[in-house]
Image (cartoon, one colour):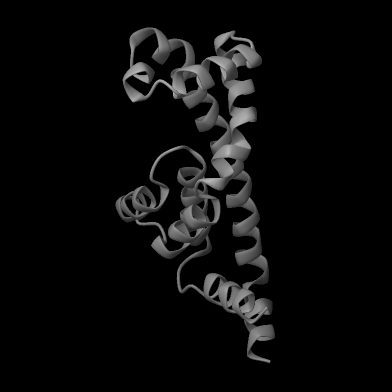
Amino acid sequence: MIKIKQFFRKFFLINDTPHKVAAGAALGIFLGIIPGEGVTASIVVALLFRLNRLAAITGALATNMWTTFLVLPLAAWLGGKIFGIEYHDLINDFKATYELGWKCLLSKVVFFDVALPLAVGFIVVAGIIALIFYFVIYYLLKNHKIEFSKNIKN
């Protein structure tokens, strides 16, 4: 319980604007959900856009890898809808090609029929989730930062 309090204390008391903290966290959440290296990418992109790096790293670590598997069905469904591919066909094709390795995933047919719809689905879903978290974190920081810091000191 003490570690959770310390985490929230550090997160909500970051000395930065609410926009930069919320945007950094949303960036980390976005890059943590989509497959790839979320932590490193979060640091680099947060640095480039002058967002809060600690919030970006925290967002990436909070969502890195485990949410990728949770979001996969939704990303496959949405990517399939966008590209006109049945959800079950896309999942089955992904499972079949995944076992064959990266060379097969990067072939022209597999890329356009499997990898691209999944990637677009992941980007859209991760973008929506990150946007929701941006507004929630921004609201909390903007409206409750003073109250939260007073409660921590007591």
